[in-house]
Amino acid sequence: RSYRRSGQRLLMLIGLCFAGLTLNNILLPLDLVWLRSEVDLSVVRSAVGFGAVAVLLVVLIWEAR
Image (cartoon, rainbow, N blue to C red; front, side, top):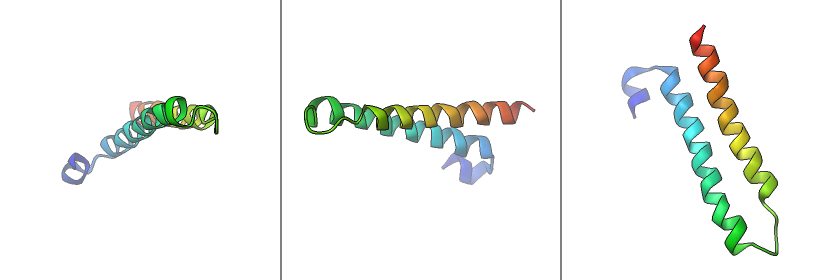
């Protein structure tokens, strides 16, 4: 919502990072508790977490210039 008011890209992309980290935390109990033996979601969880942190890192480097 703050992005719509101010129009700053930084807010939108950091929000995207936190959305990815939230998805990572939602996948954690799904992987470790409910789908313990059927499916291994550790690679998917790691990819989502890595992608979210990579977005944050790129945005912070990009905005520092």
